[in-house]
Image (cartoon, rainbow over all chains, first blue to last red; front, side):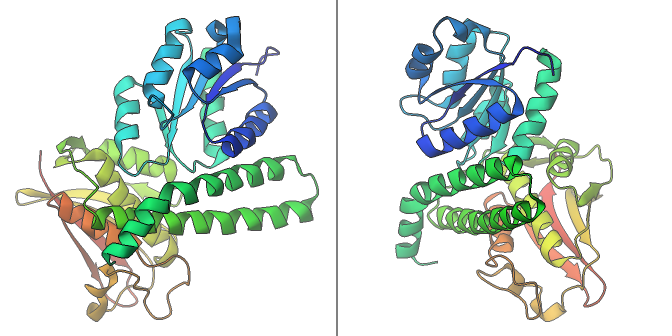
Length: 126
Length: 211
């Protein structure tokens, strides 16, 4: 990993899951900006939103699905790679993620799988 | 599962899963930070117990959704090599023969069926599983073979029932994985069966239309 910490935008509306995920992502070596929806995270990230390397999003968010939310964020950070997480059993999340060309992991995704994806992805975008 | 149970599980599914998912993440974050081996071992056991609970809850909710008719299939042409690649990536105990065959199925639901069969092989089939696909008349047979203790002929139909655990089977899970696989197969117009003799391993077969 380079000396510059990658910037991850984390979209998750469950407060406890978001907090635990931020610990894991920061321990991995990232700077993390968290928000419960696009408006929230855009406000938290400010001008840094354009520098995002990675977007990790829950699929079920208030107001919009995670794939649409990631597309809105990528409009300002087209270089960002996207991972969609979902506990949906209806398979709509996986279909939407695949059709947008985003990576997908079912919830509860073991953190080792998320980190393996981050290692692979970060090596590509570095 | 009766309709009251189905309504109950469908309604509380989301609320039960969120804190459990958070618990799994917190445990894992802590496990990664703790340096003491003994403490790590305790946390690892807590993590495994929480994963086991999560897996049972997922199974129950999935079954409830199937019972309530809330799972929808969208059939398309599916590459079995793609299905095998995804399965192998997520299941270190499995391997697969290469294949060029395609079936008419729903890729996500087919993946779920095969995951349930691999999970069954991991729990009861001696740990290892081998995937393959062959043409059989106008259909494709997708096979999951294990080297476990095998299944007596009298149990070949019974094992697909709800909450069935065979005598002497490892006491893990609720016994709903094969039920989910069977109900998803029915939804997709696939057929599922097991060929096995006691002491000789088992082969689970999903038969789907060629595409």
